[in-house]
Length: 185
Image (cartoon, rainbow, N blue to C red; front, top):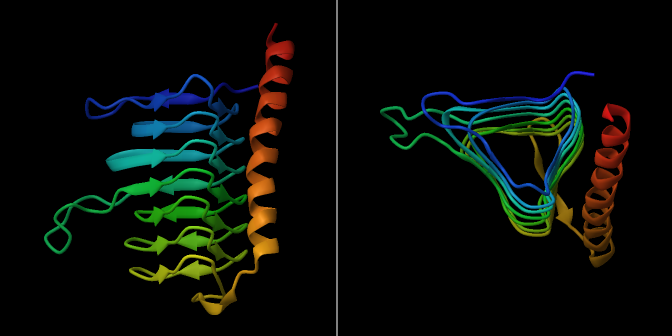
C-alpha cells in the first residue's frame, strides 16, 4: 500500500487537520490546507505549487480527483486559488481548477470546474459536466452538460440528500482510517 505523498514546495507545506482522512496513494503538494473531518480519497492529486488550495471541514474529495490552482498572470494578477468550503461533495475523477466551491456545493463524478468559476451553496454541477472559465452557478441550481448550462433549481429533497452524503463520507472516512490502522499494525 502506498502511503500518501505530502510534499512542501517553494517554502510552503500542506497543513492537514489531525481529524482529516488522507487515503493511501494521494499526492498533496505545497500550499494546501485541509480542514477537520475532511476526507481525501484514494489516488487524489492536490497540487498547490503556484497558488493556494483550501478544503473546508467535512468536505470530501473522492477517488482519482485532481485539484490544482492557477498562477498569477498579467491578465489575472492574483491568479486563481482553489477555495473549497465546508460540507462540499466532489465526486470521483473530478477536475477542480482555480475556482471557488461554496459551502455545501456538489461537483459530480468526472465533472470539470475551470479557472474563475464559482459554484454556490447547495448547488450542483452534474456528473460529466464542464463548467467553463468564469461561469457562476447560483445557490441551489443544477447545471449539466459540456459546456454546462442551467437546468433547474434543486428541490429541498435533493439538498437533504447531499447533506446525508456529507455525513456518510465523514463516517466512512473514520471506518477506512480504522481499517488502514489495523492493516498497518
